Length: 103
Length: 103
Length: 103
Image (cartoon, rainbow over all chains, first blue to last red; front, side, top):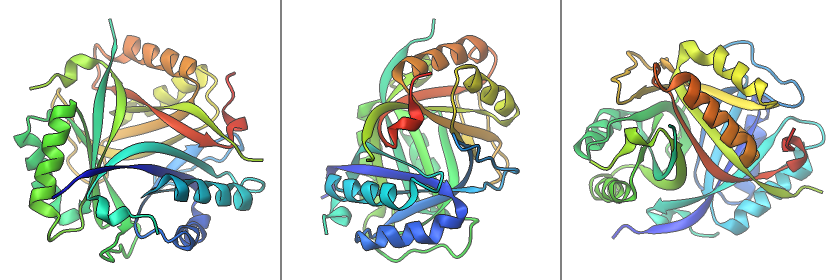
């Protein structure tokens, strides 16, 4: 039977060159699923995309609050000083909870 | 006068081949609006996109909680056994509430 | 030290021809960062994309509740009568709060 569980949706937006590193970071936290897309954006460092292909990558994953905090802390430690990375979390209710157990 | 109403944002992520079926499912629940984009993703079944075009589709709609639950239940019943479909809901405050009345 | 602050994520979906106007609107509210992507969608006015390039634009920004309300009110005033624009807000917890101070 399907049931809903409360998780955190953690979204990371950053330069596309960081994509592989960010996925590796998620895997270090035993994240088994993620969704990504190219986006364009402009932030406080003046990052700007020149076309609609998108120069930034946006990745999100659905995880427990504990894992969300660990991911966010590591992103801050690794990227906030030198990169235009933004990370935020939201409450979500996810069906098929058995796919998102804490590791 | 514009006003905000609380609704549920229901997001569905699945293989792109399911796109038409998923839109039909939404229409069966009298959903009058939706937004979709191509995404790439990797999930617990090892689904993986080979390029940045995106092999998955992500669809969301803004609906009442009752319709959200009905949509999620039907997705679970139809897709969870054989497909890599993820569905989750979030609280949203929507301006122009008159477009999102319960059907 | 990184810390989380509560902000509003304001998402705007509308015809792609409005993109520049919507960015200008955000800048009038002193928004320093935003993320955008092309999407397809169908709404109560029958807007429909003919291909996967996406005929709509989706833009979001992370701002204080006060700025969120001001943005939403201006969008309602400028676009709701004649355009298929949808705008909604969500609670988010954002790391690197120093980038999202009220202006």
